[in-house]
Image 1: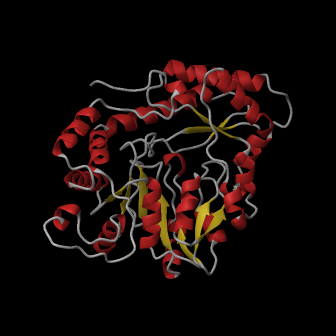
Image 2 (image 1 turned 30 degrees about the horizontal axis):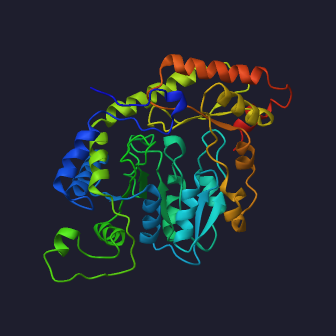
Image 3 (image 1 turned 120 degrees about the vertical axis):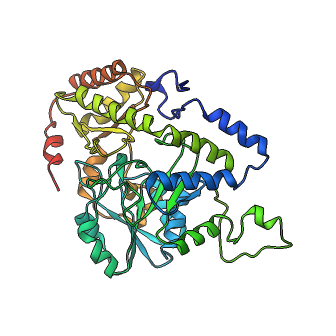
Length: 393
């Protein structure tokens, strides 16, 4: 197999991992002359559904669009609240605001950076209409302990599984098969990329039909049907957020190679775990790698040193990052801010290490050695917080 990747995974985390078949797939679709929604998109949807083991999948333009449309399908609107962790990409919150609803920020478990059933329960209010667990790093989130309570209150679970395509729950069920409205992202850096794209796993055929209307400006017919008639009907408010055939072609090529990428990502995470073991003041965020397709590798380091370590890694040509600055501290979302002790501690400790699938064991050793050296030369003191906070709930 010819693999087309970045020449340097350490310096190009944002480049996709390509299998070498994507260019031919794009060329094939270019020759058809049909670049909007079309047969290629619908075939991609069928292949996604078969992979996940679900009845249907609705493909859309982005992961953010998937969240927005799923919330609308759940009946979320003005006057409602949606429980969401603050420790997520801002797209999660923007999708909530796009419906006219308000975010209700929840805290997370410091060992996983994910919400738990207890965190969600503590955040519920009489106006909660939906809960949006974020499957951080690709790890599944189990809300089974409160599922009956949520259902009794008419609260819908909309999973932000942007990181988690291919991951599974401890019982072996894939993310997307548990009855939630599950949303995936297929942007350039995800485990499966369309260049840009997303998908929703609907709960019912009626919900799937509505999602398909709303993604195409509220129209009830696709282009091939519209051109055979003298008019069309717009059934409701909608948006232009379908997945083009060009993006779907990339996604189909990626899906065919997904077992390879899943294996590479799991191997990479395990290699990091071994290389980081024993480095003082470093705590690895647990992604449940046996069941997850890891999206990233995140460590916690003492807060007083995190920014210095980040700068020193970049000076060494190692693109570390921080994922994510908490949303309840963002100016745009300050109206919904509330104290979140674990999230606020984590915000100053977390550090994302390079996680391109093309990294070698030598690259990982280099990152681990550079991280250890940066911590060794940092000022001493205030280093016990990582271990203490990691055990908190």
